Length: 341
Image (tube, rainbow, N blue to C red; front, side, top):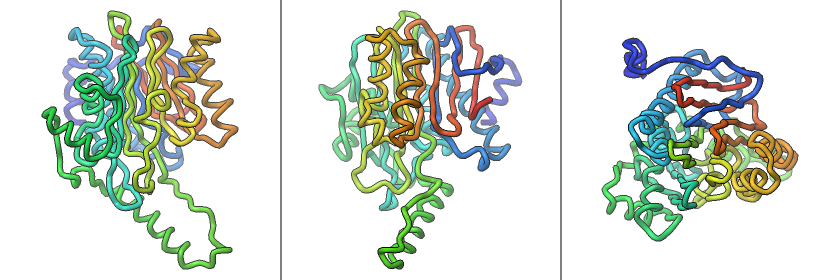
């Protein structure tokens, strides 16, 4: 983040921070992002706190720069997510978690709120920026979702950045899967009747997403993830599933989700929020709170959603201890939060 600090110091990136309010509602927003439901607050260090805030701020400015240069909402979403994918701090791209087999398998999706066009990739292992591949599927194929080797061949033919799978290896994610393997070995050695439920604090955190509103009034949403630490081979969560982890509709809002993907798929979370806004005439805040806290939480689903409505109002709802999130207004004012602040 040295480059960001330099830009801040010489004034090329304005560092106007919005004062924290009693909730997450902010008006006149052009871009909102999230970096997942986050670590438990007790595990957060001052240095990591600083790095995360700098990363989220940089992603907001990257997306806003696209809008300021005349780009559309899809450009802003892709730019913000690409920057977060390139960081080892979050569970997307470079920082992706490991599967039970010790692989990094990435998922992403993007959606245009004006046309309802959408694209997604799942289970990819060599595409540097899955969000760009998702957009390529949307714009350069007849399909919505491509998976595995097929998605990788398509991305290669489109000239996207392809990397060795070793690119995604990071020490802290490797340690997380080591812990799970250790638990697996311990449980295997125990009598079946004494086996405790499998659990790990590393299960999932850091999925990234973005929602944007451009000058033409068009909304877009995108989400990118490495999935759940220790996920079984072939498992796909909500992030690449349109209507579950990602949805955008100019008539209501753009939504990006993070959390326990199986619940978000079953409850069609992003679409449900938009539907409540369209048909029940609920506000973004009310709809998101209902789905995340009144529907998912009682069912045992942990997670969050961020949204940006057609008027430029940003909001977030989460039933976890924290949610890495931020937004930037059309005037360039930034707000970044990790927990309740």
